[in-house]
Length: 266
Image (tube, rainbow, N blue to C red; front, side):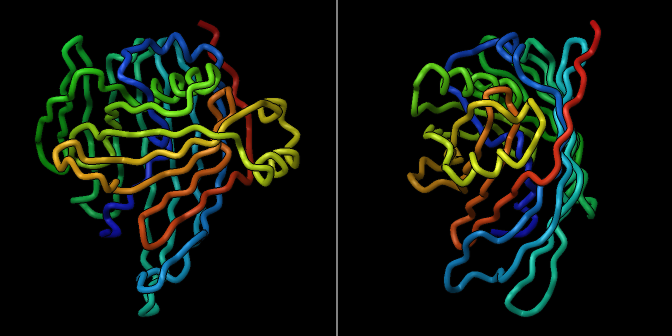
């Protein structure tokens, strides 16, 4: 996989079923800001990566009528040739509370890695429009949802005891259409629960689940995912940990700092 394809948007690590739902289900989700440290958690023989370091700041904030997501920071990949390749991870999005409108930006370190655009959802699917790196449109399949909405929905599914579901999700992290995501839900590991005990914030004293999600290109009809992501989320939508599995290596992001943010007075 090209390093340019490693633009990571951790908001999009969870998915839902084919149901179209409203962000009214996100009423219990928290506004917060957190810092995560990156490390190489697994590497296979033949991989061209020997180490990963870095840090990202990530947060979600409720506004009057929408959710704002911001991510800033980067990772550094040390290769088998001794080179160190920087990978910026700067992303922001705006998603309307009714789940029908979505705007996004990925700010890269080169002109062809900067992505700007928006999307809208209708009863028959929707449309995504990119303005950078070049103008292009994609039709979104019926049932496609945007990142923050499916975060709310999969938490409801986990709470209801459902352990497997799939959906089309569009997040704007690359100049492509929606991807098919298949999600499996299990309990959080003892290691993650123990790590949470080191934080004093009341927002982190919640129950949660582990979500394993595979991303597929709907056009290829392949049984092999493009990549897989494992995520531990609390029931208020706060992500504690991610593992991005790219096949020959995997990267883990662990929460190191956390701050709750106030909700708006609407």
